[in-house]
Image 1 (cartoon, rainbow, N blue to C red):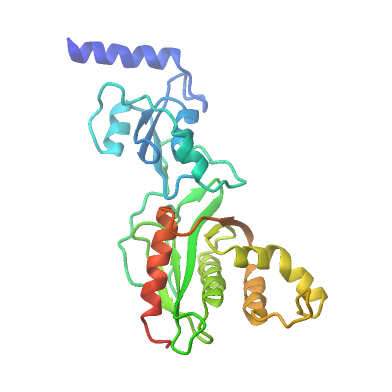
Image 2: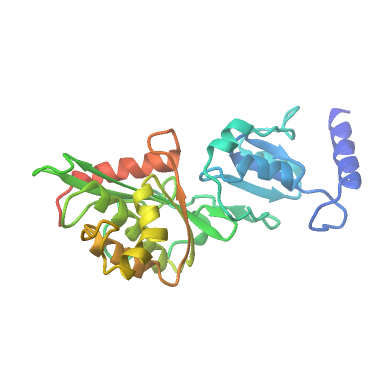
Length: 285
């Protein structure tokens, strides 16, 4: 009797609720494995509230509720299809300019499938596009740079690039050349763009906690170039070569430069920082 009532409830829901995609009048079920609240939702707007601008969100659309709950990783239960957005948490996420795309039937959004490996600076084969996290059509990446004893003789700098949990492109390497924190931040972004181009990625949301890097590439570079690579006070731009390299790499790319507060609990930023610190411990070669 319980199973019969459950089946009747699902049929009734399917008859009343129409799918935005027009699936013969039947409703779809949106499963959120990783987001502000995990669960199964019956509309895309409810699902989007849980995953939009949430780092490394995992969600997928299914034709049946059973399949949706199986994706979430636990059996269906009362209240599982309902969820409310945590407004404070959503506002704490850095906003992007692109809206999240509704997943196609049965298509998974950025579900990681590759095991974590230590990446070198050599050439890398193409990685399955489903292993990346997305904001609409834009691939999400976090970068960070660090430098111990910054400004001192024994300074050691490293760069970190984080694409997602266990992603094969995650990398932490020693910064070559002059060891400073600002150079590490700039070249972490350079590495991420270099990797993106190698993967034929043209649209990138790049999170960094370095406003110096963001302001430099989006605003100051043009003024420096017009002024013969001198600052407003007439001094030489110390990081000229670094920004020249970054600007050249960014050509042909559609990059959304996003600032994220450092050491504030953002998983992507914390992981990029961890990779950068690991890289700083390595030898420069």
